[in-house]
Length: 156
Image (cartoon, rainbow, N blue to C red; front, side, top):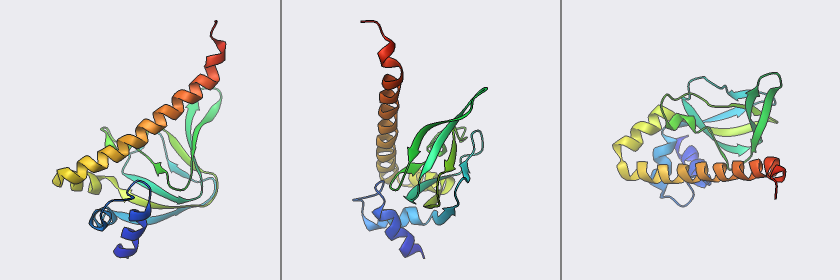
């Protein structure tokens, strides 16, 4: 089972190109996860104790707007990483995440992976570089969405 998970982890874009022993290291903290349509995967404010490597299906990231209900801020699909709040104290989710359709993912135990990253600084550094790149990509996408929403209101 660990070998199968290690292969799945190794083929995910987050870990693509890393040696097989790194995938096996991550797989030691991982398990398969499945969610049905409309299921809440992450709840804002709840403990961020895992993250997900999406394999199939789509998930929305939502924020609550007073008087308006949930607003979708991003939709993630296969190959994406769901959940980044596990990286930073106080380890609480900043958004809700809800499935749009059946989702298959690899769930990675956050405390387990943080412990492995602390014990192996070279692995921890590589992990942080890769997750940092995902965060930067999401920040840039948010910036573009904000320009689309508000950029046309600026006077010339």
